[in-house]
Structure formats: structure tokens, C-alpha cells
Length: 389
Image 1 (cartoon, rainbow, N blue to C red):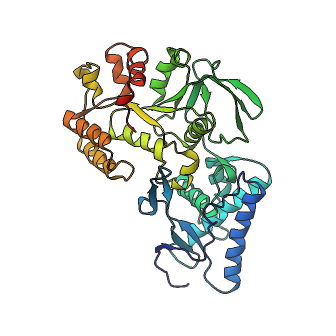
Image 2 (cartoon, rainbow, N blue to C red):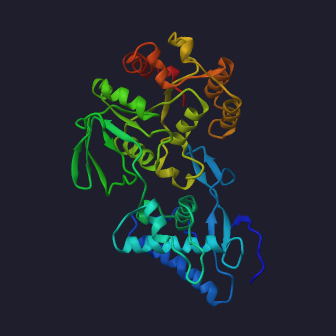
Image 3 (cartoon, rainbow, N blue to C red):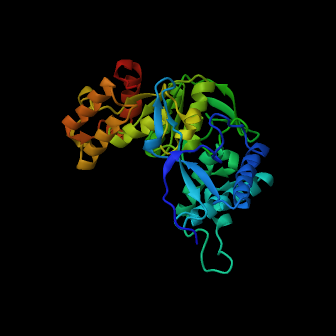
């Protein structure tokens, strides 16, 4: 057994990672070529008697930069080398090659698989042992994300999808996999936004909307739907059931850039709401390699603001006491480069700390059930000076 080697973060000179900015598009043969290139590189290394390796870009705050020109988070060039003859890395190396093989099989068969499906496709006992290739789903998911960045190929290009988590309704007609859908005629449940929303799957046809309003939670979205806010204000309503998944963020990006629709964001007045807004606007640290196709730098935070308690004469019933974790998280957020130096955000977070409480969007119901749709949100949309950028 070869001696274990220390894992180090470094810039890769001869990496199996695809060159940055060379993304080849919609997958298919281009993606299978990348997987084949990865495998052939490993085979060539073994043939030379050297320790086979793959270089995986690091998905962490230490390897992201905030591009002030594009106004979104970008992945840096630090990578972590994964060696086969390393006792601590051998299993992860095997898992990486195994998942790549299963993705290649699906692409060549023109089939798509769920993330859970990939786990079961790749899971088996290693011949001659009682060792499993994967023990849990949580062990498999990061390997798939590693492959995305190593191959510079999107999950969709690897023919992998996630469960739908988010919905849309409003003034838009579009085609989904050949079916024409009028988003004004979707009842109370709306359109379940899938994880794959690329132009090859969804094409926009007719849009009468003036803007997109994205709300944090399904419960709030349902109030807006029931009150037909989208019809009265000529907009598209979306939610991501908390932090929006890729499909929702990608769809927001597409509607903003292709349909030229402003994106307004309505979140809870707490550090988590602020963070979700920043993910929509600048992208996320973990998925920095996809920011260019998901971030909406022009998105605006219209509420709930720490100043709204006084602006709208809310009662003490809306208050939820801040705890130490809230304060700690708020300070962390202000240290992010994409928040740092923004005076209005500094005022917002200082006000929340001074208040000593946070508020949920649902708290607007303390005035009356439809206050958020009939009075609060229309007032916030008109008062552009209260928006946070």
C-alpha cells in the first residue's frame, strides 16, 4: 500500500478539470466527451506507473471571489487533488469515477435520473468484500457536485434532476416539453418549477407581466395567489420554499434576462431572509461555478425591512426575539464582500439589532389577513426609496 499523502489545496497545473469559460453547451456528446477525457487521463496516469488523480475545484468561501463588475460570486482557481493511492482518498476517488460512469450511461441512453436514482445506480457491494460503494445519499450528493465543477458541466448536462421545490403563477405563457401552459390558468397550486428549466425544455411565448415577485415561502405565496395579486398587478409570482433550488433561481435569471422583467424579493426580516436574497442576487458560495446562469444582480429586496414595524404601525404581536445565533449570523453576513460597504444594508441590520426582534412576512396578518397583498406589498412596490439593493 502506498504511503498516504496529505491533501492540499492548490492551483492545478495539469488538471483533469475543463478550462474555465469553455463550457460546451447542452450536454450530449460534448458532456460524454468530457467524461471520457477524464477517464482516459486517469488510465494514462496508471499506464505510466504514476498515482492516478483528479483535481476537484474547492467549493468553499476560501475559493470564491465577488466580481464587482458582474456583481456576482465567481469560483476561484484553487483545487484539491484526489489521489487513488491515498488511503484517505481512495474510496472518494472510486466514487467519483463510478458516478461519472453512471452519468455517461444515462446520457448515451438519452435518459435522465433523479439524484436519488444516481445513488441507487451507483450503490452496490464491491466484489469480494462487504464494502458498499455508497452507504448514504449524503455521501453521494457531494460527489455529483464535485463532478460538475471538475467537468465544467452542469448537473442538467449530466442528465440529473432534483425534485421540484418551488412554484409559479401569473402573466406568462410558455412551452414545457412541447406542452403549452398558460400560467394564469393553473388554479391554486400553480406550476411546479422543475429542476431543469433550460431553453431546450422551457420556451417563453407570451408575457404580459411587468415584474416578477419572488416570495420566500409557500404559505405566503398561497396568500398572494388566493388574493389574485398577480392579476391585479400584472406580474409573475414565484416561491422557492425557503432558499430557492437551482431550477427556481435559473428560471428567475432567465425571466429577468430574456423577458427583461425586474425581480422583486419579499423575505422574512431576519438574517436567513437576508441571506436568501443574497443567493438570488449574487449566487451561492457552494454553487459559485453556476452564478453566471443563476444570479440576478439587479434583484431588489422590497421587504420585510427592520424599519417596517414603525412604518406600518405593526403591533408587538409580530415580534420574535433575536437570539445569539441571529446576531452572530447577521455579523457574518455583513462581512461578506457583497454586503460590506453598503450603507443601506448596514442601517438595516443595525436597526434589526437595535429592535431586538425579527419578523416574518406572515406577521402582516396581525393587521388583517390580506394586509400583505392589499396594502403592504403595493405600498412597498411604490416606495422605491425603501428598497434595498
